Image (cartoon, rainbow, N blue to C red; front, side):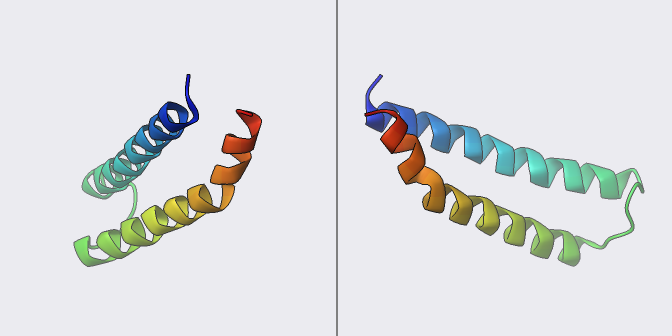
Length: 68
C-alpha cells in the first residue's frame, strides 16, 4: 500500500472518529446522561474535532516514517 493510500485511510478513520464523537455526545444529551445545551455541544464538538485534527497533523510524519 502506498504512503498516499495509507494516509488517506488514516484520514478516513479520523473522520469517522470525529463523526462518532459528535453523535455520542448528542445521544448522551438526549438520553440525559449529561446535562448540556445544544450550543455547548457544538462548542465541545468543534474543540474536540480541532484537537483530533491537530494531533493528526503533528503525528502524521510518524506514520509516514514507519512506511519507509
